[in-house]
Amino acid sequence: MADSDGEYVGEDLSDDDLLGGPVASGADASSYGTRSKGPNDAGKKGDARKARGGGRSKAAWEDIQRSWENVVETEDGSVTIEALLEAEKRRRLLRDTTPLQRGIIRHLMLVLDMSFAMAEKDLLPNRYLLTLNYAVDFVREYFEQNPISQMGIVGMRDGIAVRISDMGGNPAEHIETLRVWAEQQEPLGNPSLQNALEMCRGSLFHTPSHGTREVLIIYGALLSSDPGDIHDTITSLITDRIRVSIVGLAAQVAICAELCARTNAGATTNYAVALHEQHFHELFLAATTPPVTHTTAPNTHSTDASLLMMGFPSRALAGTAAAAAAVSLCACHNRPSREGYACTRCRAKVCRLPAECPACGLTLILSTHLARSYHHLFPLRGWVEVGWAEAAAPSSRARGGCASCLAAFPPVPPGMGAPKIRVVGGGGGGPQELKVGGVSESGRYKCQVCGNHFCIDCDVFAHEVIHNCPGCQSDTRGLAGNGQGHAADAMVIDS
Image (cartoon, rainbow, N blue to C red; front, side, top):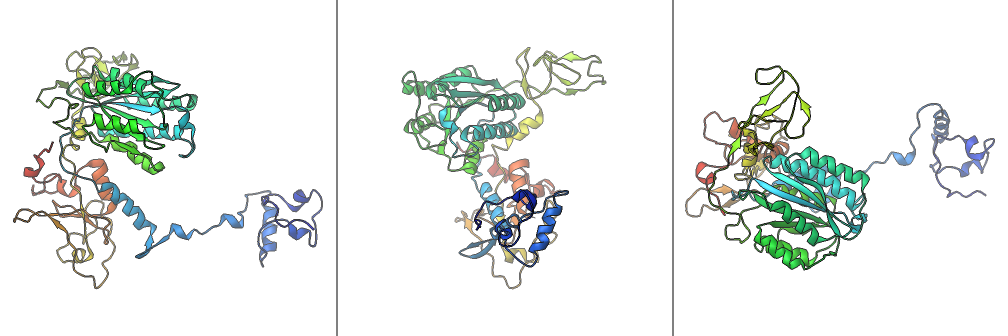
C-alpha cells in the first residue's frame, strides 16, 4: 500500500507523469495528492490536466483566508487593521515639538560596521545588506531634511577603517558608492572603533566652526580591535567638539555607552540597541534631526553670533540669454552639460545645488534649502484628537470632510457622550493648550491654531513632509500664522 503522507507534487503534472505509465486505478490512484476529497474533486483533477496547455490552477492551500489581516482581538474588543495602522502613524508624530536651539548646518560622518558580525542573519536578509539598504534611505532622508549639510561615509572591516565616500553634499554620489559596496564586498575581519573614530576626526578637523560635527556609528559587533587606548581618542573627540551617536545591532557595549555619554554632555539617549528591523530603521532615521545645542557642554560649538557668506545663483538653461549656446564643463565634476548654476562671485558653473564653488569656495544654495532647514528650529505643533461630541457639534469644522484633502470623515454615531479634553498649563489664568494624545476615536485631528479638522494621512503628511499646516496657510484673515504657534511662542529658543 502506498504511503499517504508523501510530499505534495504540483498539479501541473498529469497522472501519467507521476506514475511513469498508465493512470493507476483503485486504491493506488487515491494515494497521490494531498487535497481533500469532495464532490468537485474529479472536476478539479480534470482542470489540472487541462492546465498543462494553459495557465496553472491554484492548489487548495494557496487560497488562504487570513482572519488576522482584517480583525485583531484586543482587551477592548475587535480592532481592525486600519486602526492599528492609524495608531502606528500617530505614534510617529507624538514627539516633543518644543522649539530648541539646533545646528542646521551639519557635518556628519556615517560609520558602518562591515566586520564578521554583520554576516549574522538575525536581521533579514543579514545585518550587512540590511544596513546598506537602510543607509541608502538614510542618505536620501538626511539631505531632504538637511539640504545645506554635508556627509561622509566610513567602513570598519579587517581591523582598519576604510573610506567609502568623502565629505560632500551630493546624495547621488553616496548612494552610488553604497550600492557598489553592497554588490562587490562582503563583511570581513574585526571592527576597529578607534581607527574609525580617528579617521572621522581627521575628516571633521577642517570643517567650519559654524556647523556641527557629528559621527553616527552602526555597530554590530561586541568587540573592537584597537591599536591603542580608545579613551585617548574619546578625549580628543571632546576637544574637537565632535558628538558621537551609536546604533547597536547585537547588545549593549560598555565602551559605546561611555563614548556617547562623554561626547554628548552626559546624555544617554544617543546610544540605543535595535530590537528588530522596524526599530532599527526608526533609530537610523532618527539621526536626520539635528541635535540640540547644549550651551554648557564642553564639546559644543561656539554660540557667538556670526555672519556666513552664501550665494544664491539662478539656474541657467540652454538657449536663454543667461546660458552659453555651446556645451561647457561644470567646475565640480568636469562633465559637459548645457545647464547649471553660475557662481555669484566667480561665475564658475556647477551642475547642482547645494554645493561649494570649486573655484572660490563660496557656499551656493537656494532659498528653498534654507526654508527646508528652518522647520527644525520651529517644528509644526502637534494636532490633537477630536472626540465624537466635538465632531457632532453644530460649530464643528469637520462638516465638509478633511480640510486638506476633502476626504469624508466617518459618520458620528448617535448618543455619544461629552467630549474628553485634557488641559495642561493655564493654572494662573494664562493660555491653555490641549495635550496631544493617541488615536482619535472619530478619525479627526484638529490644529490648535486654526481649528481645522484633518484626517490621519494629512496629519502625517503635514508633520513629516511639508512641515506646515494647510489650514493656517490658507487662512486669508492672517490670524493663524504658519501653524508653528503664536508669534510670542515662536521666538522662544530654549537651550
